[in-house]
Length: 207
Image 1 (cartoon, helix red, strand yellow):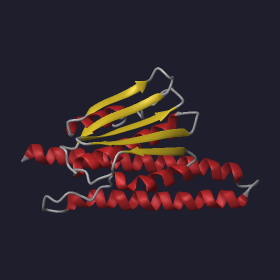
Image 2 (image 1 turned 90 degrees about the vertical axis):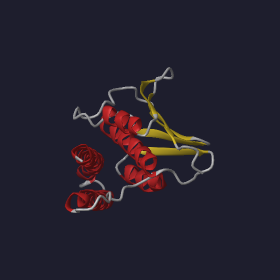
Image 3 (image 1 turned 180 degrees about the horizontal axis):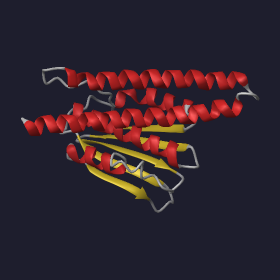
Image 4 (image 1 turned 90 degrees about the horizontal axis):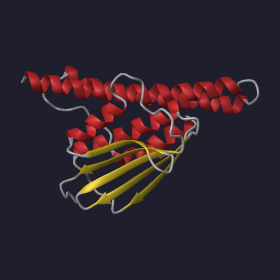
């Protein structure tokens, strides 16, 4: 029982880290844009401030839904996002100043919940790291649906430091997420000079 409770607390801590870290990175970038354009282009500055408001509202809502599980006495897990919400994630990152290209191959299908969440958080954390640490604000997300796995790759032309914020929930956190569902994980520089995060998440042949 204690192990299950400890595991759930760790899961919640990781979820909160990912949501807050992503939200704050996006808000900081949008705020920098607003400050830079405040005098020269008030209309664009206002759009950045509106994006800040949307990002903050979405992040707060997700944190509340995640923390709600702590206040419940049953074992229901808080609702969490999946790969079907990548369009929303791309929109938020675009508003924050990151250009995101998404390429999908194979037939999209329903995934096991744990795999779906792990895949979404992997993309979210990878894009957040690009936003925080890369000078080139562009990323490519590739999804490939194989019969028994979903393969995810996020790459950025800048092979600089994408290791995260040092709290243990950056690259290491992504590796742990992937490992928890029995997947394979890679993060590092590739021969073409890009920084790439790649994961193969087994789906058990779920169609």
